[in-house]
Image (cartoon, rainbow, N blue to C red; front, side, top):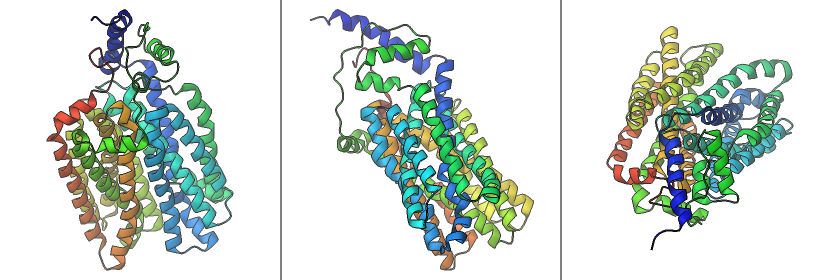
Length: 461
């Protein structure tokens, strides 16, 4: 029996639309979507690290011990893990756009309320709330940026998000000094909250839903929304969508699907890589200023070293994206990981020479931030559209566990008599282990390739 006429008519147009998105030149509209995602990540970079900028002042005002300050520093990261694990997967069911908007609203509320908190318990709870919103935004903005980019520029699109994060961290580290000196630590939270709140209507107006989600989930008015995207990308309208039963996965089904036989190995490899890389990254970014002081540098010099790490991250993430447009992303990421391993050891051995340490520190920022950006860029390509936000959110959550554990563990090891050099050598080994672990992804290419075939086509609709 021949297929109904509307399916025959709809299929080739749908195929041309998805092929135009995957293989055609990037339109101004697509780059605009990516620019919005970069802006969201810039705000997140500021909001995530605000406790790092204000922690010393808050600790002095409220007479907090190091353990309590550590809880405040970790509460935001714990919230991000919860947001990526519990909120971001909802994007596979209700859409990327509403989850991003809800995450922005949560982050803005958390930041604004933090500016009027009266004790560390209130601030800790509000940092958790802020982190939940940021975790959802980070996961979903990386997904939607990748879904609006062509195959050639997908790595760059997602890497640019991480560039935004590094830019936000750099702006925060510089502006917080002036804000705290003039208006106090509460002004830093207020500034971040107002900036995040101001972006909510901008994102509501300009951020579209992804084509992948509309074609796979078929929400209300899917055809008109697909045609609106098609027109904005300079493509013809569709008369109808190919027949396809909507996916009805629950959150639990989605997590189980990540560990199904065809996805189990890449999922476990990504989880392991995220855990290792984020643990190493947050050790470097959290402890480097303190260890520089212990090595004999002044507090101002140590702050300069930390700022150079963030500045290096701006260039490192952009460079990774540019290289990924020309070479295989997995190979570029592994190179970054092995170079990071060598650099952190060289850095720990160079602290006696100020200029050399600063130079290596800036290059470390290029490398270690590129490692994070590479993982963010690689992960969405592994999962089909109905599981993409769930897969990215789960990987980020596992990584946040490493981010929470590593700085605390480093403190314990220092108390136990470890030297900074020993810690940096261990961190180098962790980067190497992540690079070796990603080799297992290559031995599972058939499953990964199948998972990348995500958009409805004439044969799959």
